[in-house]
Picture 1 (cartoon, rainbow, N blue to C red):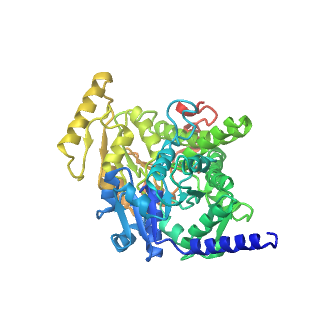
Picture 2: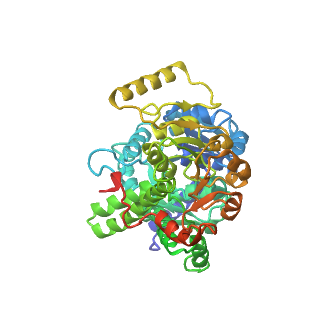
Picture 3: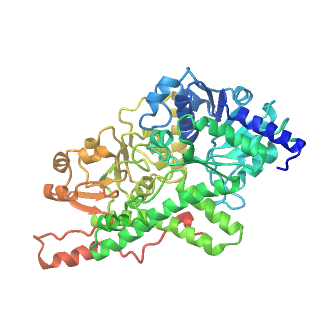
Length: 544
């Protein structure tokens, strides 16, 4: 600034404003009580005890669950923190107007699903929930607010919100900043308590810098200032999308190599260890398996593909689409190997499924690889017995289409449903049966892993839960039909120990060992059992 009295006065006023904004807000609002919004609210309440945190969700059942003894999401350590903070400085409420009017800083953490119809269906993001909530804030807020994009959003979403959150759409001008969540499901509490970095994107204006200062004043109560980085809004939005794309790319890359390992008798675990020691590459996200799932990577990759096509970058779009195709192909070839190994048919055979969540330490089943594998086995006529230590029975039923053609479902020890819900399921099943003949497959969801394995022709590991490594496999071997097959989709188990017990083991990225009793034909037989990776196609909606 020039050294004029007016300029100096302006600078003093701006500095004073920043100082005022740097005082931590007395009340913070969170709109969206899902995994991102709920976890963020819980951590802020724990680390900022002098700040009230109000959390709202459009689904009253979600709020009721947060106020119960069982939070609606599972994260190690989360329940304990909720119980300490709830009704002290953390409040889950059904009153949106209260949250907007009382909060000085409002986190928005709502879904950005893929459009299922219209322009860009299957790839384009559906931003309707962001617009709806921006309009709610504009109509209900009487004083200026700092609105924080917390969920991952398409580039320039903040521009849409900013237009709505300023006059004439709003009563007063509100400032929009971006602060994407970089934590992972299963380690959210650790990641939030001690993040590697925190990124804040803001407009390069006085108001934008003041809004960023308000959020920084919250985070510096437990995060070192040198771990808080600021940037412009557009770069921040794209950085989060790019981070997820790069992580997904690494997973697809090692899975591509896993297929090569199987046909060349290399071990993908050894390959991963070798390249992971290279400091240019590093060891993270190099474990071969069934591919990525959850709400982030598949959705954000499709968003990126759409974005590239929108800006006429078809080569870039095809590059990222290849990451998605590899992810789908990995699940497909794993399932085909199960069918081929079980003498080319699984019809009428019981198969034990261990794990349904898309990764360990979470109950999230959105785009879980387990769904694709199970649906394919069901289509082949298999009888599935599924065990997962955290995923509710009703969620597995919904994912596999119970009530839309499935039948003979064992409810285990789950609590009874209300008459209304039960009647609705019966009506849905009746309607589906009238349109489609019921399949021969049967589904049971067990509360005990040993019950799932009893009488099974094969055991399939689809989630890397630690407890699966500690199961009594001698006992399981005695309960299963002969020959006993294990298909390890997560490279989780001790394969040498399992083979010593008597199991025939297949694991992604590892060559099948020779049977010393089978003679010279064993190598030929093993090679014949391997799928032809050149002929497997990716079916379904990914064939754009």
